[in-house]
Length: 115
Image (cartoon, rainbow, N blue to C red):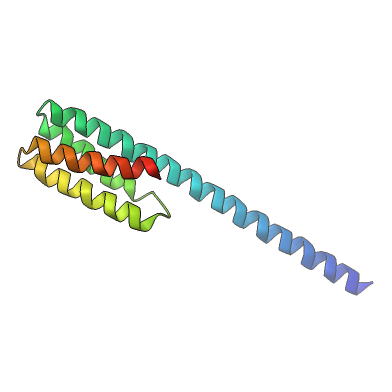
């Protein structure tokens, strides 16, 4: 009888652990999707501001995009590549180079939209 109780307890514990890890994974995936959406939104807003030559507002959106990218889990190589392009876009926007900044941010945007 005790063996049955122990087996049932072990079975219940195994199910609990599996359910908990599934919930944690779902929360992580949700936060990652939200992070990608936020990054995309900030990059699109930065591009709009750059097209208006409002580099101060663009810089704020670019910084926010970089901060939001930290919420993205998984896709490490893609996020690194996209973030490098965002940084280059930020540098070029700071120099007033609209064309090159726009090109880099559009490349980053394409990577983030593919995630």
